[in-house]
Length: 237
Image 1 (cartoon, rainbow, N blue to C red):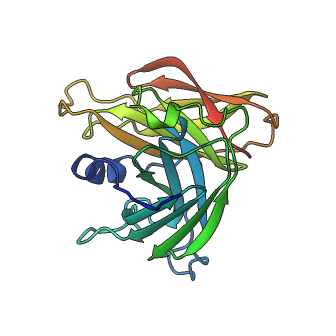
Image 2 (image 1 turned 90 degrees about the vertical axis):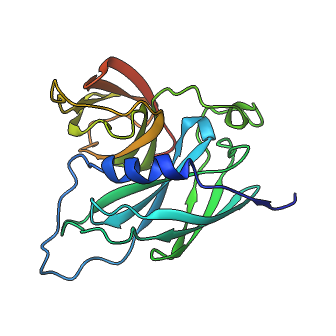
């Protein structure tokens, strides 16, 4: 299949919101005086395969940006660059960078991901169980519904849509049943002003997943604009 030169998602809209939406769940910060761990890479399926979340570890306030994206069936290459002229907190946490391609990905097949730039390395995103090959879902326009995908056995990326200046802030995430994770958002101030755009916002959620089943798990969203919204967490733990 011929290569396709791809585009990063909604450049102007995404840049501010990815930074705003980088809160993590129970991820812990390392001692700033200690030497940071070696770079790590992971990935998650989002928006029915229309997007992939590339997960890296570092400052939670400085999420890498995606550039020079290219894709052939089963293989994605993306360059990650650090945001310019931005102060960074001294924590060490997982962050998600959203990557989308024209026509979407195929979540029913494995995806080999090569990352260049500030977080060079490679990882494999396994096919999402239960997805049908060539069902066309990823090729269509998003339905603007929340979606979530596992990037590790104890963490998932959570995508929501709405104002880029009023992204949900994570308060807590915990396993409340063998097949459920309750995600609680911070209650926003009553007088907050939000822009009227519609943009993707991404959170990187960490939790104690030891009590969860190995099968399908749902995230239950509460707080901010969400009241008991159920979102399947796709992919493999």
